[in-house]
Length: 306
Image (cartoon, rainbow, N blue to C red; front, side):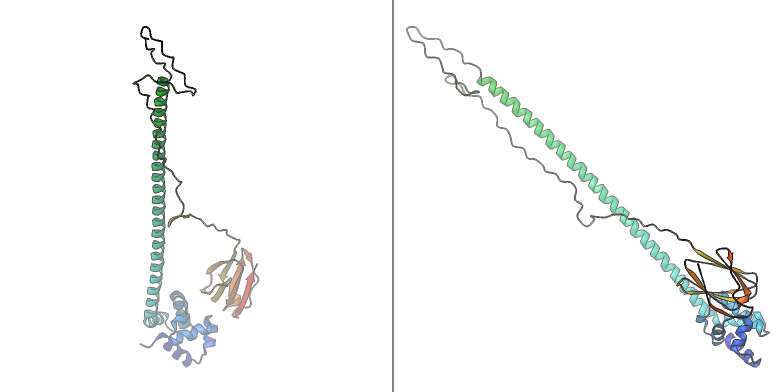
């Protein structure tokens, strides 16, 4: 079976019609008519709109629309199946990327919790060491003070007097020491030994450092504000092909049948190309706009802004 484009071209040439005449009759752009006849489906819009082209083309030539659709499926089925597969692949890639980002966030949260737990445990350990050091220091001070007090008490006690023998002069009394805390000891006695104050090992502690592979981790958030939008509403009175460029984005195309409505939203402006200027009514933010031209005429690069 010959392709749908070759079939349309043969019928069109048999009836003596040009591509521009068919475009004007069907309200389809001439480059789309040419692409359909050449089988260049990549230049056509989505499959739904392409089917609408086929029906309009077949109707304009007086052909059976269902037969034309059948020829279109036979000719373009493989192309649109590959296109659908590419779309599914894109969706799958986006989903996988979203999962990877979620996993990275979970790992970051787990690392943050581990770091906080480690800091908490180190802080508790350092506090425990400080308490033990303070307790040992206080205990040693008390022991040293008790030993010193006991030595001073023994040193200040006077020795017992020795009785003098008859006809012998009494021995001279021992002289008091000039310095406080020192006294003469009787013969054969030992001075009390005062324990030296032990030296304590002080444990120095430092606050946990913020340097290292996990230092400086912070969580930041980002917010956004929405500006006023332009809302463009189109309602078709007649069959009309519409191309809309929103701001500086890519053009969007639509085939509007009588009674159908479409809406676009932007920030600064819309640029319209209408296959049937008098076939649509337009409103901008709910306010009606002036007609773009008479019915059947093409209006190109119509700029609508604030």
